[in-house]
Image (cartoon, rainbow, N blue to C red; front, top):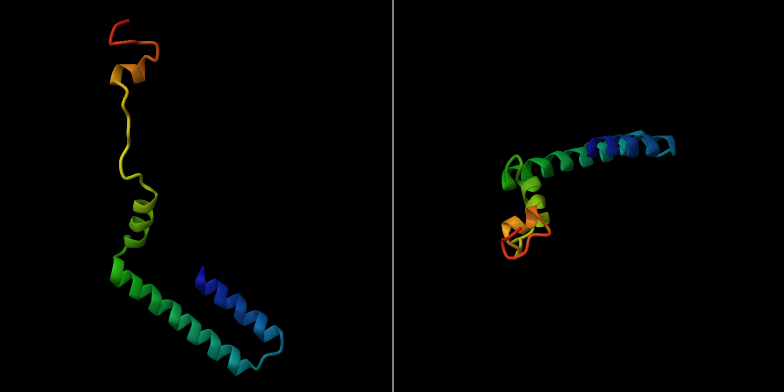
Length: 82
């Protein structure tokens, strides 16, 4: 996604009349930073580390359920008797 955004930005700058070498320099520098940041985060968190961190943030710490198990299955059951 990032490389596609850089390509689109390069095309917009080139069509707007910015010097060709400036466009190329900005494209190469921003692509290099993007690749470096990807490898840096991969080394820090592992292959799936960022996805695991996001999943842990969305996961509840604990689940509270004070009803008896049979009452969850049969809603009209009171005191364990039918």
